[in-house]
Length: 261
Image (cartoon, rainbow, N blue to C red; front, side):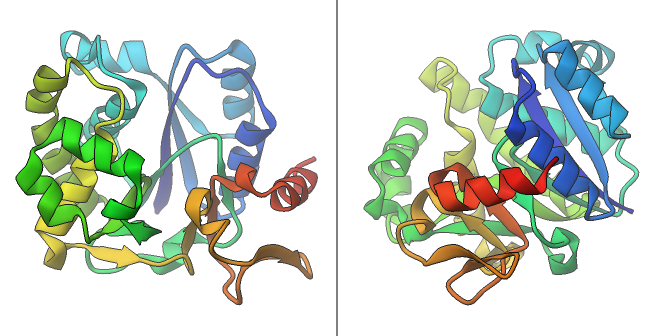
């Protein structure tokens, strides 16, 4: 069995959520939403589409996470909750842990599982992006930034692989969180800096996939010709399985929204 897992916090029902649920279901995978503060309409929509909904408060109490997670940002919580869910409740063979409101599944992402965890690059290196550079500077030190500055940016919104291997990767990420949160006073965006450090310091243990599988459009929208052709969304000549951050391209967003009735 394959399972798509997301975390959502304080959302009202939106077209983006509907797109995620409906397109995820078409992959034939189980879908689990771990939620905190979600509007009742969102929870009802998740459940009415036969997706698994987990209430974060109950889940945290059950797993004695309340004190640990009380002050964490949503991005950090996503990592911790996904890790605990994989370790304690997940029955799937393979998982895809991703973002929630800006994801469209065009093909089955699980056709791209490999023998080690798969992560997805953004099409540029760290030194070309002031935001990612700042995140790494805040979370780590100059030595770490010097090592990572010429490495491809790994997007924090997607991890694919066997449940066992993804659990191990998330565990490594969780080990980094306490010291960084203490250093930064629970800075919001630590997950992507952590993921980039772990992946690039142990690059033989992971597979970095290109836009052919998951296209992260915040940067790639200006680098590739991403367009609709014959009821497919193409990135140049590739047909990605997943489009992430599709709101960057209004033609693509309109097409995706029109596919969900």
